Amino acid sequence: MSIFSNPSSRSRDEAKAYTAAILDLLGTRDPMSVLPHTPDAVRTVIERLSDTELSQREAPNKWSIRHVVRHLADGDLVWGWRLRLVLAQDRPTLTGYDQDLWADRLGYGHADIGQSIDDFTILRRSNMRLIDAASAADLERVGVHSERGEESVTHMIRMYAGHDLLHLAQIERIRAAVHA
Image 1 (tube, rainbow, N blue to C red):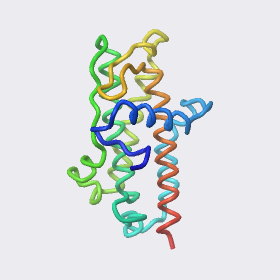
Image 2 (image 1 turned 180 degrees about the vertical axis):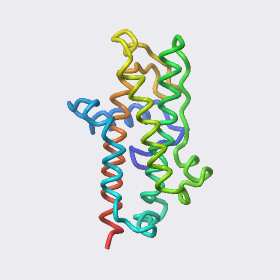
Image 3 (image 1 turned 120 degrees about the vertical axis):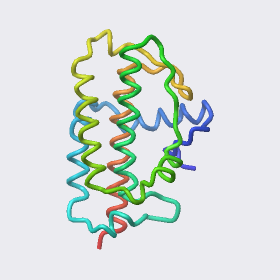
Image 4 (image 1 turned 60 degrees about the vertical axis):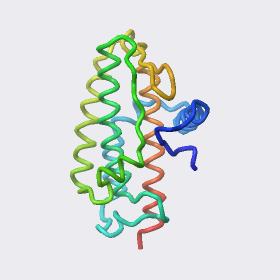
């Protein structure tokens, strides 16, 4: 299993390794130089791809670009919920989820790509509004992730920026594999 796989059954050690790998992708970059621009970056990478190319998996049991874009939209839905919990409540529990079960059971392979990008754009804009309005004290508020432990808003911002970079690279890799 890839270090970037995200089943809900991961151990504490696997969750730490996942977190370290995601944060390593971001490195010293400012997450605010990534987060607001990811929806447009996705649009740019996938423009002029055919419906067949968007649906083609790079390998058996791997996601297509269509899967990844829907995952980004749903990921921002989850992130928005977590942000709101942490900003409004004291030390709320942040539940994990199995991204592959979501992809299978929520029909990512058949998702309308335009709707997925639109959803991602709207959700990201809403989440950025919350971050932009957050005070320094708000950014230090924490939730307790069911798999990864305490996570501050600042930490979540860095995690989601790294997550964006991971999936942008994945989309580029799939595009290279399937584009004629």
